[in-house]
Image 1 (cartoon, rainbow, N blue to C red):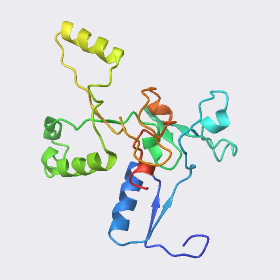
Image 2: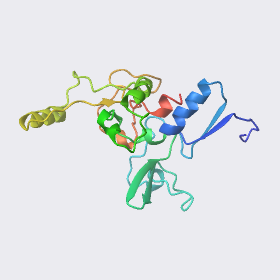
Image 3: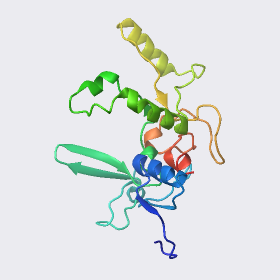
Image 4: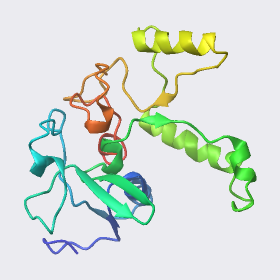
Length: 203
C-alpha cells in the first residue's frame, strides 16, 4: 500500500536491471506494480558534472542526510563497487556495452547444465530489442577507432565494434537527442541518447 492507500499486487525495490525488467514483466502479466527507488529521476541535462558539488555527486545517506547524489561507493571484503542512485539504477552510469558471453564459459561445472548460451539467447534477444542495441554505425567517423584498428592490424589482433544501448542517429523520444559522441556515458547522458532503463523498460 502506498501513501494514498492504494494496494499493489507487487512491490519492486530498485529500478536497475533486475527491478525494471521484473516490474515490466509483472505489469504485462496484468499485475499492479509499485517500484521503489531511493534516488531521483534524472532528465537529460540534469546529471551532475561539477566535481566540487559533492552532495549531488555522492550518495551517503543516512550518515550524511544532504548527500543524495548519483554515485555510491560500496566496499566489501576483497571487492569494491560503484552503484547508482536514480530511476534506471546502474543503467544510468554503465558504458552501454552489450557483449554476449562465449558459449565455452558455460562449460564450467559450476554452471547448472540447463543454463547455457542456447537457453539464454532468447532472453539476450529480448533485452537487445528493448534497449535498441547496435554497434556504432560505420559511417560515423572516429579517429580514435581508426587508430586503434590500425594498431590492432599491425600487431595481428582482431577488433570489433560492440553492441551498445545508444540511439546513434535519431532521437527516440521527446527531449532526447541522438548520440553526440561525448564519451560521457558513465556519468549520465546529458542528451538522452543512452537507452537507459528509465527510458525503455520503465517508460
